[in-house]
Length: 186
Image (cartoon, rainbow, N blue to C red):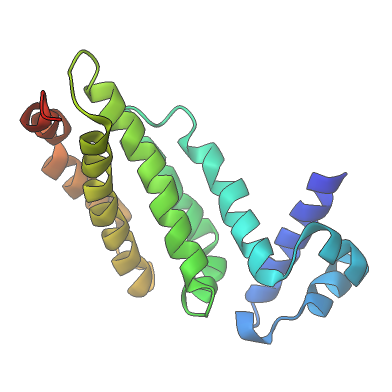
């Protein structure tokens, strides 16, 4: 029952963001829309920002399952872009509010998790210290998230497929090359 209630509150917040900015939405608006009491909201979340964080974590992690290998990372990134477009009001409203940090932090975490799996896969059989694997994943994480933030900042209007193609072309074989440069260094 708990997940159903959380999902109802998430849906309500997204629905409200279709007509209001985040700064104009209150917990009371969400509870009225869901036909629950405020106590129920606070039982599950500390505040609206906690709900936003839950939405990002809960809704995006499913897109990356099985899409975190060198061969499939593009599908995971594509699914995240498609999620963003399907939830455009939610993404843009959180991005253009004081809760921007939740979106950006989530993008960093999701992207890092995806990339570290790709780096680990490419490093099989190599002797590369963990700090270098993390460095490589962090390097690409900042590039990926920077491009995504630029896309969001421009209103999510230009084609994300070309962005994925360009990223894919740019990094093809680069994970392995980077790992080779760090192999044996401790």
